[in-house]
Length: 238
Image (tube, rainbow, N blue to C red):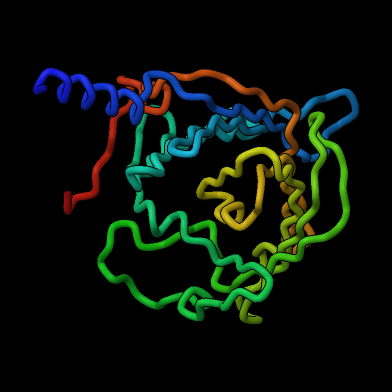
């Protein structure tokens, strides 16, 4: 009886923590316009599973920022170069975007003065205002997937608008599982995988990402862990 119990326990753990995971890989290219015949070097690659996400954003100068998320454990790691910085999962992934009819949390619509002493007390990707999503009937096809359109319009106090995001236009496929990461916390409110994000600021600048390929892959859990050569930096209080 004891042997059967032990075997059943091991089987249950194996089912809960498989060695390999079915993940989606989405490859994005920058929507920034470049000279004729020259492809933009900026882009983003996202690997994700309901419990994990590994995304890398590459800038036109070759610099890169990677994000590792463990949703089931509530952990977030930002990697730049050979350094990894653990961040507050709940704080950095809190969004200031709301669905139609959803109540607005007024505590997130204004900037707080001062510092409360927390080493990680500001989400740099959310402004002091808020955004409201408008789902439209427009459709298009991206990377072979039919997509629907949603537009997020942002509202800020008048003195805070300069340089901030005016709107984000998102094309998403409702059949693909959704994903989100710190630079795009708004994707939490999108009912599917975003295959194109176009950002417009109040000063007229536009930029974004468009998917060029969507693949289904098998990855081991270790793929979603930082490599051994990454030096993890910890806040002083830890």
